[in-house]
Each structure stands twice: as C-alpha cells, then as structure tokens.
Length: 364
Image (cartoon, rainbow, N blue to C red):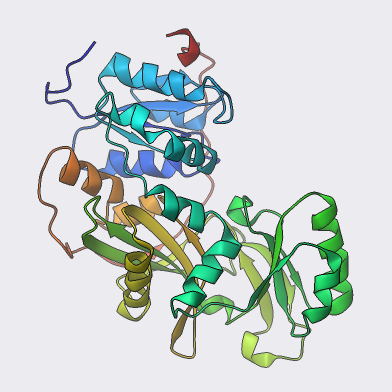
C-alpha cells in the first residue's frame, strides 16, 4: 500500500502510554490546527494514550529484534508521513536504524546519531560542554569507590550518567558518609554513576526547548521556570544541612513532571541556543539548567522532545507540528514565530481504559 501523495497527515507517535514523552507529543499534535490522523504505539494494550489516537498498535519493546520491523509494517500499512519517537529506548534503536524508516518515506525528526549519543551520556555531555566553554557543574565519573577521596565539596548530586530518565536513582549527598553509602549502593546495582556539584537554588531551575530545523536553521526557543517545590515538581527534597545558605533552605531534585512559568526568558534561552548550535542539533532539544549569578549552568541535555512538549504547545510553541509543516508539508515556518506566556500547572487525570483488543503489529 502506498498513497504518500494523498494529502493526508498520518503520523505515528510511539510510547503514548504516559511513561515516556510520547503522550506529550500526542497532546501537542491534538492542539495543532493541522488535522492529524494519529497512529499510536505502545508495548501493552493497557495504554492511556490509546484513548486519544485514531489507530492503536501494540509493538514489542525497543530492545526486541522484531521492534523495527513491526514499526515499519505499521508505517507501510497506513502510508505514514512521519514518525515521532516517544521514549528514549526507542530513540536509541531508531537512531541506529533510521534509514529503514526513511526508505519507506517516513519523516523522523530526530537528531544526528552523534548528538544523540553525546547527550544520552551525561558524563560525555558535561565534558563536551566544558571543552566548548559553557558553564557546567563540576562533575566526576565514578567507576570505583577509590575515586570518592577526591570529592571534598558538598552537597553533590549522584545520578546514573546513562539511563535514569525522570530523575530515577538520583540522590543528594551532604557529607562523606552519605556519599559513601549512596555510591556503594548505586555501584552495587550496576549503575554507571557521576557525582555532580549541586548548584543554585530550586527557584532558579529552567527547562529550555531549542527547536532547530532538520537543515540546521534555528527556528525558536522557549523556557519553563520550574516550580520544583510543589508535590509533583520534585523527586528529592531535603533540608540544607551543609552550612551553605546561598543554596537555599531546601535542596531539591526536580521530577519529570514539570510545571511553572513559561515564556521567552532570553537571558536563559540565548546561551541554550548557542549550546544547541555547537552540538549540531537537528530537530528538538531540551536543556536542563539553573541560573546562578547571571550564568546559565547546564546539568543535563535531552536530545529529543520534552516532558513539557504539550505545555509549550498550549502557548503556541508546537514543536512536532512545526517540524511536520516545515519538512513534510513544505510550509515555511516563520523563524522566531510569536508565542504566548503564562503559568501552567499540572495535576492528576484519570482515564477509563477500555479493555478492547488492540492489534499486535508483529502480526501485520
């Protein structure tokens, strides 16, 4: 089946269940004026996102040898124009096998493999930024316990430098005994760990989106000043016992559920645009940082759509729609297009999931 020139706007969004960022892409596309026909995929039929798509398919996990073939079969069956990748495991696999989607005419707005490989490794990210003159926290990769002797300044953030999305397995340590205890635990669990200097205050944390066309032209940027002290906004929140009042009364690690004040924030987005350009970004990029003494200090980069993609779309900054219109519909998206600002809050929402049979893509 092939009707690639039938004027349709059929797209696949993967990982729509809410555990990744696929649900955010789905919500953003539903907010767009472009009339999308959305095919959603997930690894289980009990997927929250299936209630909001036009067609649903169960696919194998990204690590399964059948995964890419199943996705190609879906795209071929529906003559899909674009694939929006909604989870990091899928991003890793599809980055390595992108030619198979391109061969059937499916546009897939993901960054170059080198950018993805760099940014999905937090240790490698920090070394790249430092080497290129950008501000980052002091960072040390911990391969064994003996390296901990070199760490003298507290507090520190311990976290996996590969995997660990949504602040999973992240800890704040405020003294040497905590450093030893948490490091031993993470290393014993087989995690690849970095120790990173804790910088700034929770009130000065931003998540920044920089959108670049697949031709390398900057389209726009946006920032969310996070409300990290709310119940949904943090994964770790501890009293500051370090005797360093400049860090605030509470030490906080934000969660993957971002909310807060959204807008242009040029003092924040400007340096982040420079970072995206230096990396060679193509498509979406999400930069996590704190603003400290007039400097943007970056502690993580996600080379993909964000957990705030739908929040951005709510104020007219619709990243997946922009890329589809620019590269599939061949419209020229206005550079520095205007968008709104405001405060966006999140809560819990329940969905009654119908117990219906969802086709298994392996059987196509």
